[in-house]
Every structure is written in C-alpha cells, then in structure tokens.
Length: 387
Image 1 (cartoon, rainbow, N blue to C red):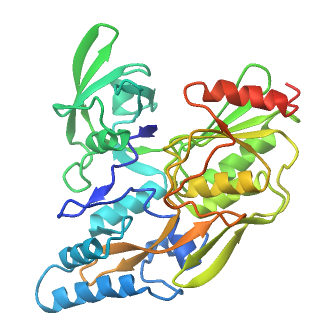
Image 2: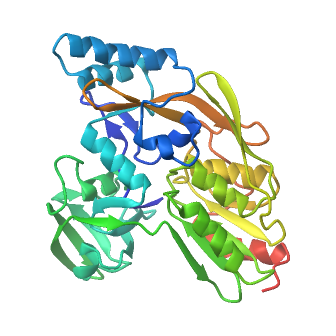
C-alpha cells in the first residue's frame, strides 16, 4: 500500500475511536446529495434525501448541547461513537475546509509519497516537484525511518502520512516536521516546513512499446477529465493500464467520468441513500475497444472501488492485483449549530452485477503483488495489444 501525505490516517474522536479517512470518508458528498458536479459540497445543509435515524440522533444531540451551553461538536462525536458508524466523522470548521480543499486537489504537507515494504520499512516512492521534500534533496528510494522522533517501521502507511501532515489545527503551513532518513548506509535528519501544495492526481507514462499507464492517485476535482484526455491521446489500438493502487477514493463524479472514458454508456453502480435507490450511469462514447487492465491493491478504496467494480462487471477490464479495501458506504454532511460538520453514513453502493463492496472489497481476476505491473503487461499482450 502506498500514499502521499495528502491523505491522513483514520480520524479519531476525542474518545479514540477510528472513524474515517479524508478521501475514503465519502463516496462523494455530491452522490449523497444528488449533486454530481460537487456544487453542494460547500453547502452541507443541502440534503434532498431523507435523514436516517442515525443522522437525526447526531443532529439532535448537537442541538441539545448547544441549548445547554455545551459543545455541539463534542456531543456529536459521542453520538457518532455510540451509533458505531465506522466511517462517520465530526469536523471542526477548519478541518472541514481542509477536507474540501483536499478534494479540490490542495493540501498542506511536505510533498512525499511513500509505501510500506514487505519487511515493514517505509520507502519514499516519489517527491513532488517544488515541494519542501524536493528542496531538501530527498529522492525516491530513500528510506523514511522516523517522523518527529517516532519510529515509522511497521506502521500502516496511513499513520505515517498522518505524522507527515500533522493535525489540521496544530500543523498549519510553516510548521516544522523532523524526518529521519536513510540512503544506502548513510543516515541523516532533515527538518522541513510544511507548505501549501497542489496534487497531481493523474500521471501518464508509456512503457516499452506503446502501452500507456494512467496512474490515478485520487479522484480530486478534474481527475476524470484528465483520465479521459489520457485515453484519447494514447496510441491508437495500444493497451492501457489503469493504475488505481493506493487510490483512497474521492469524488464519485470523477470516478464516473473516468468510467465514461472506457464505457459506451450504461450502469456504473447503484446506491441507496436515506432509503432511496439511485443509479449512476456513464456517458456514451467511451473507448470500448482497446485492451484495458486495472491494477488494484489493499489501498484501493471507495470511489476507486466503484470504478473497478464497474469495469470488471461490465467485462471491460481485467483486474490485476490484490483484494481491494472494501469501503462501499456513502456519507452525507450535516452542518451543526456551532459550524462544525458531521459526515454520517447514509447508505451503500453496489456494482453493476449487484455485488456489495463494503467490508468485502473486490477480488481481482488475477492475483499479483510485487510483480503486478509486469503481469499487467503480459495480460495486455494476451488481450491482443499490438504494441
């Protein structure tokens, strides 16, 4: 599993219950509100679907606390914890603003991407150009040993990313983070200052021959159009590898737009929200001819799983890798009396064949781990890629 410090570990309430990931916490607000262009994400009070009992309990708890002169946010956190909503979360105004900015492709961090190796060590896999990490000379392949004095070996990558980013309120732009690093036998320390950065969620490169690899790190705003453009400009007839490994999700509208690059209309997923059944469809006119392989792993979550399930069930792609995470629930935002926001689970989605993803994930057609990219190339050749 890999991650950039755009992502955070599961949020924790003041009572310590793990609740949500920044991107994985929503299929998309727009999906829950019915606004697939994301226009209602800035207005968490816009909710055309019916409230769930859980939703009403949390809102009522916050209102009672406000009337009693207590903290609505703390009351809402306690209500979420009592209801056992795994992906529910309560954000302060500042935290929710950061959440929104992350979905728009902006974040505060140092510009590192990393993954955990099989031996538990954390390896830097990429450094964003112009970032503090880049200015310090950190390179892909370096080993990250510690963050602010805490050993990171063996930790989930989400926790490492959380340490790099710091808390939303306590680690703003300009705060320092101490990194322990190693390159070969040389170990050293760096002190970086967190900066405001923009993500590059879609990257494209070509392998030997004409195979195009489209890597989607997250479904932030505009990523679907980037995928569509990458498909349109790929060599005619050559195969595509859609790399969704480590993609924690994001905006469902962007995942559906990405699906539309490979499908000629038709069902992408169904979902229930507030007791109402709805469906997501791709736009017509996608490329349904060229060979396609989707790469996934245990870090493929939420909207990325929705896209994977659509391509697999529709027979459009061969899925290669390891079982995906299994986050198939939908959250809806609710503005609380003090301005904080509760994101609460209101429903779950299913793939076109009716399979539930939540808690199960998606099983790839072909298992592959360390050799996933090489296996994907072999599969493309078997599918008739003429490269």
